[in-house]
Amino acid sequence: MITPARAGRTELADSFRHPGVAAAYVFRPPYPAEVFDLLTSLAGESGRVLDIGAGDGEIARPLAERVEHVDAVEISPAMIAAGKQRPGGDRENLRWLAQAAETMTVTGPYSLVTAGASLHWMNGQVTLRRLAQVLSPRGVLAVVDQKYHDLPWAAELTPVIGRYSRNPAYNPGFSVTDRLSEQHLLDIRGQHHTAPMVLRQSVHDYVEQFFSTASLARELMTDAEATRFADEVTAVVDGYAAADGTLLVTTVASVVWGSPSGR
Image (cartoon, rainbow, N blue to C red; front, side, top):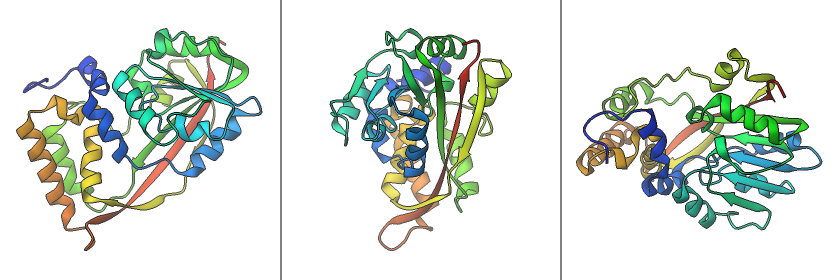
């Protein structure tokens, strides 16, 4: 447990190895079907997909229902254990590999590589070079992102997160694909933003999903801190909840795809 000092980048990345973070992943909103329609199209006829930084398989599990084969590479055994227990996690055409993307032993060729909110934790130069080796000649890397959108309580919530986040340098405007493009590591070929998806989420689930993030992992807080954080977030959103204890939330997702440079 890293307290009370703020964690560094390595410690933040290592948060995903914690069982508590893996357990909290189930409370994240799902990606919309629109994302998987696009990824299936990008995968093409061969339909062999590599998902890096797979987490609990938020992308890999639904995509395995649509394509020939998915290799899910994830450095955290806790994440893989959680993913295997979740819907679609035991499909025969889904292979889990407990490896780092930079040194993974996969050979390909893959028609599509996917990455959720994970690529920014990796060594971009090393990872993109490795992907260039395993992608088919016409294959692409697709980076998927999803965020809550236009939440009415956002202004009230921001200072609460700021008090507890272990990542004071967090920049909500940072784009990993823009950075890779600027570094001439990724040739961007296209991008797509989904229509806003509106869903109901219980106050409990909304609060718990924060603990699935690197900067707000329970394992980076004392028990008292984690309790206070949950209580403060609950206090912010309770006034917006329906009588049944649910919140109306909106999410938007984006997919940016391209080719590792120099391939």
